[in-house]
Length: 328
Ligand code: NAI
Image (spheres, protein in one colour):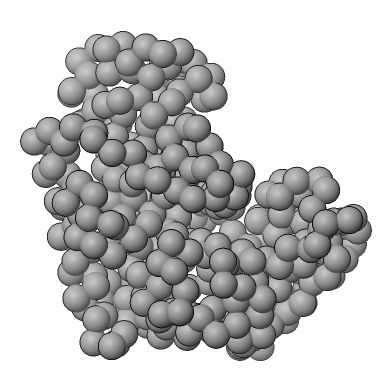
């Protein structure tokens, strides 16, 4: 039998946690022959610790054959011990009267602590996926707080935006989602994101050549639809996307581990490609082989794209500036 893989999940009793845990325990992430151990971290307050116990009761009742062990934690040092995969979902939610800088400051304390814990106890090749918002900067903080781990271990989730872009194109063209290739999303997981289908194809044909008034549709329909999809779901469902976010997290980690020839979007520390300042966590198009991602190079950056990409860069530089005194 294979050695169990240790998966740490934070915010495990939250909406996304409740959607991702059962899929992972069922083998949707690592396959039906890979035993797993779940190490679940929740906030230390009574309500969260009580809620996670209820989740554990349900996990037990699912009698998942692949699940070797599951434990609950309120301290990241025990939650991340020997973790092979860490999914950082738990974060402090934005309150209506809160400035973005306040939100960043509160979250930075969570992600500094978790970065330090990963640094001291996680497996040296731990794959970290941060989901909690503001996700790019939370990932940056986590990475900077873990100086003994490679920057390549840290990624941010832009996969939901990527999947939303594919869904939108598939429905526009009335084609199956699996036939859409080479779509991706640049930048920050915020309104400044830039979903880019200039290179995208369906059955080998360039999608931009198939859309009437392509440039108008791109700017006025496609881009706002993708960047505002999250808000739209909140207003219709009455709660933020959870099942689709969990599904995107599984897609992200699965591709990272098993590789993909398709272009996919990962939030990763910039290596300076496309003039994105080094180390900023940015959505890039990547391919993955042997569990190593590679940024797709030599894509043309036209004037419109440059402007969009620069908007995300500026936003992220400001986010980092507002918390940089906390992580030195
Ligand atoms: P939720 O509020 O239902 O759950 C969050 C959970 O995290 C709660 O159970 C809370 O107790 C826990 N938590 C808070 N602080 C913690 C800490 N220090 N350690 C461990 N656990 C902690 O929220 P939901 O809907 O599950 O979303 C989670 C995060 O994911 C939010 O920040 C949300 O904005 C973000 N998100 C990101 C997406 C992306 O595309 N990157 C998509 C959808 C959501």
